[in-house]
Length: 181
Image 1: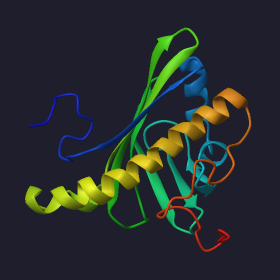
Image 2: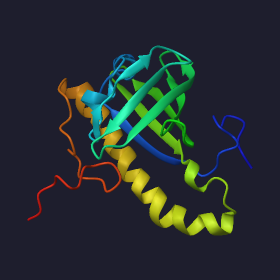
Image 3: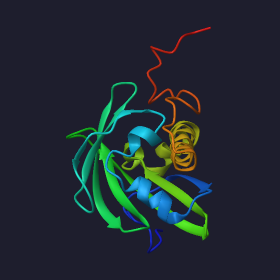
Image 4: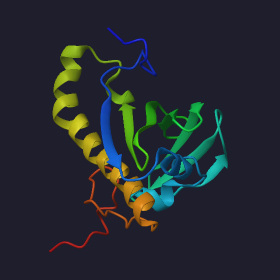
């Protein structure tokens, strides 16, 4: 059963990360609605070239540290609140992502990112349950936690987040360049 307010009701089992940020909702919105904002905010982003910006129909790319390139296509834009987008490799399958900001005080807000990963959507529940709970969800939670922490870092410190600041990620870091002890 899906809720009426689900942004993408035909996708199931989202992975969610939320973070309270000591900044106004307006400040956070100003950052996450700026073209190319992932470069200074995202700990696994090497580049964030923008094709078209702003609003529904906007497009950009995320060039990850490991060399992967994903395209983001914005399908819903709610000024001051957030947006929904599809992300995936160009001409490949896409996951659905929802970014939302909710004010909690004059100088505090919540940032919530929900990802509906494409990789398990078409599998029966009995086959999807184990990989989702023991691989996909933990890896995506680590990733999303690092992204929300990166936004917080940039908004509150005013300086770019260092790459891999919150730990390397097996899916998105360039682990070949990480020196081994």
